[in-house]
Length: 358
Image (tube, rainbow, N blue to C red; front, side, top):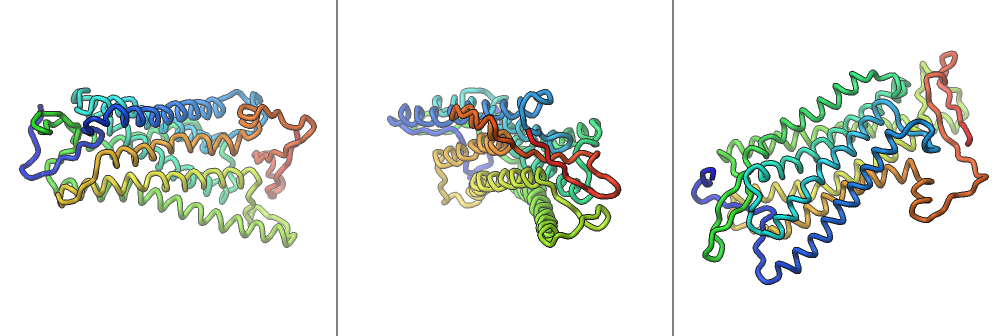
């Protein structure tokens, strides 16, 4: 067993909760909620991965290619890594005392922090890629595989290193509860100064900077979109040299990615604030944050892994999802417009958008 914390420090039990006679009822409710989130998130993300990797022509829609497609695919993979912590949490909610051993204690919060970090880094990367593609009139297809592989490796490697301290400093510690010794998986930093320094750096580098990149990218794209619409309404000709044109498919993709970004910040902000309050609790022991409160905030954050693939799939595979849930094949004679922005559409210095009906 690792050495205990310094004298006077306050240990927060995180997912361990000692609730007395209501334990079975509360644990059953928590199991239903988390198990539902786990199954829905796993099914939705695997379905999203399948649709992105499906052979061309398998589904009657235009799917993402190149960098955008790879980054969205990476987002779905990060969601799957993130929800892999749910089975461990459910075990702890039933056993109350930590009985999974030291390695599982290190792994649990590493999976949570790694999945969240890769998610926001992927969202930032795809927003920047979309901005560069629109500004330079460069579709996603020309990106080389090794460039995309290097980008994805960089995202995962950076996230893995940035969240490594959470894996190292989470440890199993004994705790006296009602006259008996129990064990909890808790976070113990070697020094308060090191903890504060890491907290500030982590929030700035992993959340604030990517968030700023996302805001700036979408603000610039929004400006381009408004200018493009104004020129379209005025009937002005488009020139590849002097103007930037955003296709219908770009608008649809940008709207979807913008909603994914909003949902991430809405659903991750509560847990980030809660963790900061837990860390502040060590400095002010009179603050009292209940483990049950932390659990439900965490459950709300886990549900983001369901929202991401559902929002994306509904936006890009709406007809097929309508068939699945409502058994509605749609009107057989109805044609759906699909925008194609391939390199072959740049003719004589003009960026054109061809509309294909099926």
